[in-house]
Length: 138
Image (tube, rainbow, N blue to C red; front, side, top):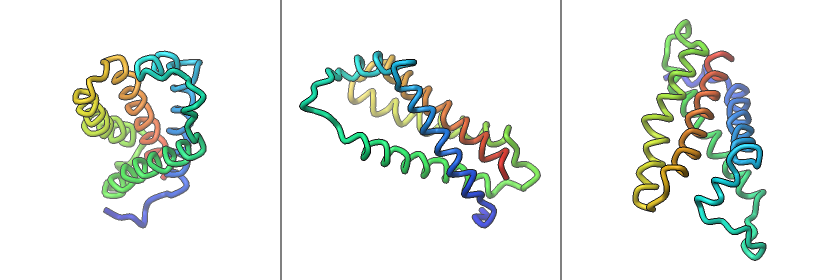
């Protein structure tokens, strides 16, 4: 692993793209209504969340995920790092770690397959996009 080759601007851009996908994914344009229904959210104003904190921490966590992919890519020979290798690593990470971890939690929490699909496919796409950015922007 050669961390001196990590492009931190690419990591930041990939994390922003991942976060922006989430803003669209969980918006009324796509899955917010179904997602809230599956979670049993009622929109009770007494339970208003601190969205600044949620958005900020979720971005930080996405940044850490993307940084992990960048660390792994730094161990590849430079000529092997392309948008395709980034895509493969991002989606493989999603399938083997993120989607399965969500699935395990949802099994014990007795959550629906629909909720798992919404959340897991978002992670698959988000990490795939992040991988593309990291692989392409060396």
